[in-house]
Length: 171
Image 1 (cartoon, rainbow, N blue to C red):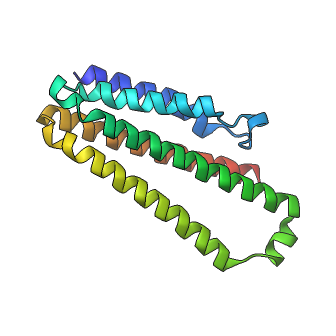
Image 2: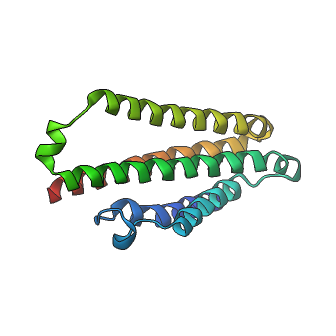
């Protein structure tokens, strides 16, 4: 049972870590994830969670809503990242002095609020989708879900911190 969780977590790390540690700027020509790559990464994440839980036939009926919420959240995240990359590219093209001269903190706050509102709505939809399934999970399934959540969150946080540090080192 734990072998499935460990194998799933390992699979996720193998798929995510190279992406998080990539040091090239994120655009299509220089290594950005394509739509196919984003889809494949989401497929891996969904598969790992489902395999770790080892759903019973009765629980399977709740899975489509969870999977849909996971995929919708991933799509919205992809759109937010693309939007941020576009904005950063525009700022770089205009130059640092021009970017500082034309900064608009109100616009920044509005963009940030919109992004947080989208993330909040996606997270709420995910929680709502999980609720009926979670109520049917056995204690073992709940432990596997908690373990997977903690390990994935910790690894993602570490990978992001290492990515930020490597970007600082390049500057």
